[in-house]
Amino acid sequence: MKFMLDTLNLDQISYYQAILPLAGVTTNPSIIKKEGKIDLFHYLSEIKKVIGQADLHVQVVGETKDDIEQDAQTIIEQLGTETFIKVPVTEAGLATIKSLKKKGIRVTATAIYTEFQGYLAIAAGADYLAPYYNRMENLNINAANVIHALVEEIHRTSSKSEILAASFKNVGQVNQACRKGAQAVTLSPSVFAQAFNMPAIQQAVNDFHNDWRDTFHTENIHS
Ligand code: G3P
Image (cartoon, rainbow, N blue to C red):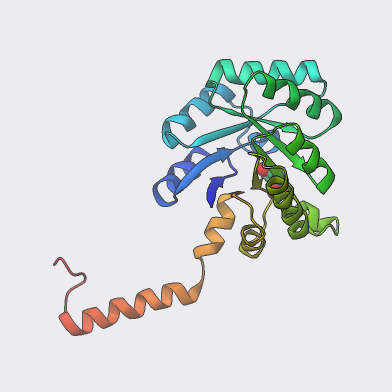
């Protein structure tokens, strides 16, 4: 499983870079908005320095094929050809995905709410598909089933596409996406925080520490 961070917050990225087996950072305009009116490409360059070889996924903003392609070109010029261009699977987006893939550009097909969008993105050759887990559940769409169907389609067609599931609000949703075969997930820092914020885990660590101290009267093995 590849774990990515769905944030642009440099402090959070630095914090979790040190902790997680981090495979990448994903962004979209709503995530960018949380950081204010930043110098986007300078900011993203700083993030690249922090994450090293991990992947960066940056979303286009344009709504027509021409505008999306120009956005993609700008992102690549500023950040390099290794950057994944996130393109929503609309009609214009799908047309652009086909075109970007012909040029060998890395593409993450995003804003996937339906199986059908996913099938089209796989056929268009997207490198990653980003189904929106929580947003689907909010619409009473069975997100786990959608991921399962897309994983089966990838196998059936021997596609190289991978599922980068997104839009999670809790670790239960992440577990479901993993079980259904998603190869990657992107989570906001708050979901990673939730995952470790379990009293039983800290209680176990405290108990081990206290038992050691009671026995050896030191705080750790090396002292
Ligand atoms: O990567 C897509 C994701 O950011 C959408 O998440 O939390 O806005 O549903 P959310």
